[in-house]
Amino acid sequence: MKRLLAIVGMSLLVLSASQASILTNSNQSAEYLRMLSRNASTEIDAVYFNPAGLTQLADGFHLAVNNQSIFQKKTIILDPLYPFQTGDGTYVGDVKAPVFPSAFIAYKTGKLALSFGFGPNAGGGSADYADGLPSFDALFSLVTILYDVFTWPVNEYSVDISFKGTSVFFGYQVNASYAVTDWLSAAVGARLLTCTNTYEGSVRNYLLNLWIFGWQPTGVELDVEAKEKGTAFTPILSLNFKPMEAMNVSLRYEFQTKVELTTETTVDDLGMFPDGSKVRSDLPAILSAGVGYAIMPGLRAMLSFNYWFDKTMDWDGDPEDTANVLNLDGNSWDLGVGIEYDLSESFLISAGYLHTQISPGDAYQTDMRHELPADTVAAGGRFKLSENFYFNFGGAYSIYQEQSVTPLTFQRSNFGFTVGFGAHL
View 1 (cartoon, rainbow, N blue to C red):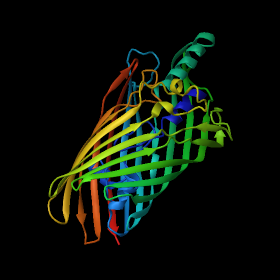
View 2: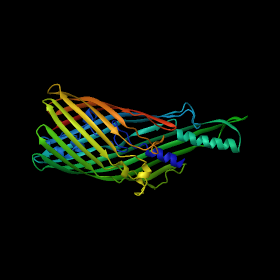
View 3: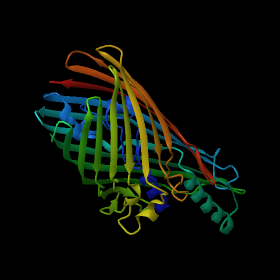
View 4: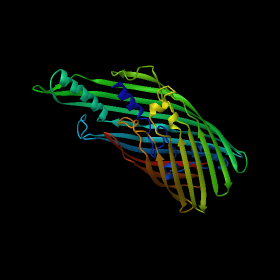
């Protein structure tokens, strides 16, 4: 039981309107959620996506604040022939983040730009498995069978199991960007992460329907309430190239981040969260590239590619065993394309498409930890409120590829929408 619930906790770490890698979020701005491709941005959200591109801003202060509301449903269907289940064999987890904020500020003067960014770089939501999971049913079914064999015949059992988890890794990023030449800019940056995971679980009403005696309570009541906290540091390098007036090319590399969390336990009837224990939840290195191109006056396109080095992550503190811990067939990557069109001087519309490839092996896919490749579409726009103020809005919907690993079938749906305000002062 301890091991099962611990893995559940690890599976609650990511919420992204457009599925990124296993642990990290790439949806860091309102502009992103309305077009799904921002790696070659030279606007204020370049603080995250392309720090070197900030040298192309107009002189002065630039700022933006955004919020996203994201809702995800994870459905697990257990093969009806599988013996360990209750109900109809369908288990649903609701993951939600009604408040998913980000903010950026930059100051540009001459060839130099200094900037700061804030956002949930991993996690950012809460997950609620109100009816438990197939593995929990399997565990209590096994206990029931043992009771049936060694004590008194049992017709059936019932149990109420719930598990809730929240996770947010807030990132505080600073960059210094410099225009080396008219066509080349470089930036160095760093991100401080404050990391918190919380877990609340309970087991109630474990009843056995005994032959002759009917339903009998077992008296089993178990609770878990714990928190994991820590800080981490990520160095960031960025280059921006402008080979011609209509084209912009970017490269960004984020180093792998060692994340060590310390457990603070309030109650732990199952012994799964020893107070003061340390766990690892590293974030992978990221290599990103982007190309932006002005096709004609008023029409712009952007292509973005991200590659996450997931297989090098450490979740158990043993650097010699990380690949076996994760059971991944390959690293994650995504490819997105977005377009913007100016309907007028004050209003533009945008749309985007993103394919995300995550490659877990069959051994990785469990009811408590699974990932699915996805295709995401998005649309939105930007409206200029005045010469110096503007408003972004958009939404994205992810279509996940259903996968089956006997005896489980995994399904997922995801929708997010955003609003954001920006200004040049």
